[in-house]
Structures are given as structure tokens and as C-alpha cells.
Image 1 (cartoon, rainbow, N blue to C red):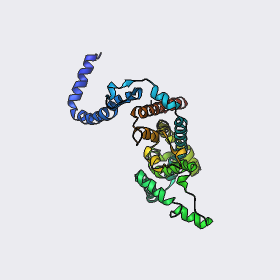
Image 2: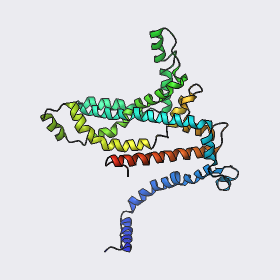
Image 3: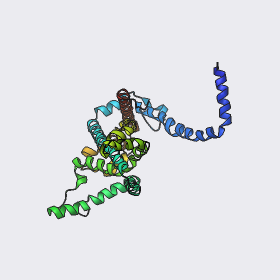
Length: 311
């Protein structure tokens, strides 16, 4: 029987034999330790009355006072509702489109046309957030943009400023994201569909089954495990909407629906007039805790309903 000492000796011999691989592994490991795990020590200021002159370790411990301050703040309900509303809207609108697009693209027979469509829909992903928002400002300009010109031609009046309407913020944020990310997000589904055997389709065609039913009963079940994993990962990011795009689209007129947790953390922690690092850290830590609870819950539900889960 192999003892623990023998196992350790075997491990040491294997590490000596393949030392080059372990040396390569050392670099990403150091990256994780230095930039991911070590900064976690700083999260303790969420429980302190942080003063830069006293440092992290010398600042007064105040427990959950910063969290209580956030929960009692008049901003709490607004930023929570806005964050959850935009996140769920983004998930409901953005999750099905890559799946539908991949299924439809997989049914095309022309290889050149399929590759062209995939490339064209894939390219918007590489547009930076700043450029994308700049394009949106130009297109939806009420006087000089395409939207404003067409509106004036159709009605004879000046178009309303969509960026100045708080009720339009969520629609513009979500659907611009769907347009930008649909092609890129479909790549993983297209890769999963490529593993489906052609024999299944040929057998179904001999039985007289049409293209739509083959897509429904052959292709779709093949990508359900991939869909489940991506749904779990997306559920873990529900409270973490991208800061940059929201902040660039935000203005005083749409602030009622555009103020989310990430922009609020920036304003109380780093923006002019803020500087309350402990309060901002407490909000960020609360946000991360909610994300953790969501991903664990959704993973457990998926594990009970089916056989696919992250762990």
C-alpha cells in the first residue's frame, strides 16, 4: 500500500522531472497572490473608521457601522433597485440572443456566407466602451444624429433627447450591449454545436424531419450544458454591472435610473467631495457578498434540476 511518505516522494520526483512546467505555473500563481489575494487584506477597512494618517491597522474598529450607514441611506433603495433592474433586464434580453443566433447560423449551408456573418457580428465586441458611447451620442443626437434627422423628417418637430429621459436609460444601455456582445457571446455556442454528429442530422433527414425540428431536438439539447454554466456565471455578476459604460451615459437628467452601486461607490470613495474609503469599501464588500450568494444559490438550483453545475 502506498504510504503518505511515498506519495510525497513521487510528487517531488515528478516536480523535479517537469520543473519547467512548474516554473511557468509560478508566474500566474504569483499574479493571483499579489494582485488578487493580497489586496483582500484591505477589505478590513470596511469595518473601520479609516484614516490615512493612521493606516489600515491603526484605524479604529467600528464593526458594521459602515454597512448600517449604507442600509439607512436614502440612496440604498435607489441604487439597489437600479442595479437589479438593469442587471435582470440585461440578462433576460442578452442571454437568449447569442443562443438563437448560434442556432440559426449553424443551419446555414454556405460556408463563406456563414463565416462572413459571424465575423461581421463578432467585430462590435472590439469597440471600446468610450467609442461605443460616443457613437450612441452621435447617432441619437436630437438635432444632428440619424435619430434626430429621421424624427424631424417624419414629424416636423425636434426629437426629444433620449439621454435626458431617465426612463430610456435602461433600454439604451441594454440593447446597445446586446448589439455589441451578441456575436462574441455566440462563439462558445457555435463551438458546442460543432461537436454535434452529422449522423444525427442525416438520420433525422431520412425520417423526414425538417430543419426547425432538427434544430429544436438535436442542436438545442447539445448546448444546454453550456447554457447552464453560462447562466450560473451570469447570475454571479447580477450585482456587478460595468462601471465605465454607465458612468459615461450618466447625466443629471437620467440619474434617477442610472445611479447604480458601482457609480455610487466611485462617487463616495474617489470622486471630488467623496474620499470616504471605508464606506465605499463596505458597499463594495456587500455587493460582492450578494453576488456570492446568488451564484451559490443558482448553482445549487441548477444542480438539483439537472446534472450540470459549476461544482
